Length: 225
Image (cartoon, rainbow, N blue to C red; front, side):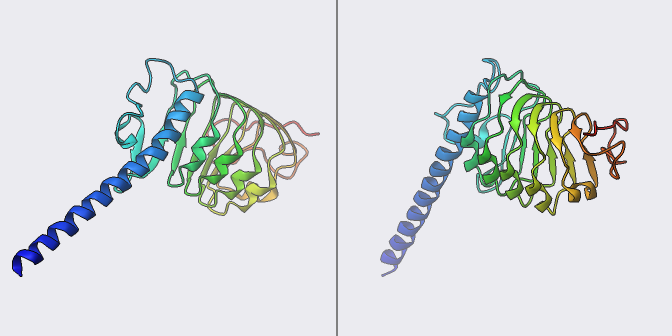
């Protein structure tokens, strides 16, 4: 009887280990595929991200990628790597991602609407690239977002009204783009904001300044239509 109980325990332990291994492999597959798609789409130079290899079991071992204790990707930071491609919508599957930083590259094209699927994102920094097109309204779905930095790009269109729904937003920096029109009134209540260097209705002849007191740069004035 004791031998049978011992065998049962060993069987359960083996099954648990097998399931844990399978769970890790499944996570690695979809997360690794999404991250590798990002590397390919942004055109990372040959000497960058050389360890981003889909043959490796877990992307949590890759450089500039951080994971939690359950091997879910939580942070990706790829700043100043001379990337010159575009953003991929495939990154939208990383629902556990908290931080995505791609500033200081030469990334062009539009911001995919699928970025709005990153439901746990608290910080998005795409500053100093060559991004164009409109800011997707889907970013208003990022209910946990605290820091949004899209400065120094070539973004056009209006500031989406949907961003007003981001109740946890602490900082929104959209300066030095080609944005126009009204800034949603609620965004002027954000602790740190900068809408300068656009054609937005703020600054001179407006009730609202283009830049909060807490920003580091000078008090620029938006062009008023």
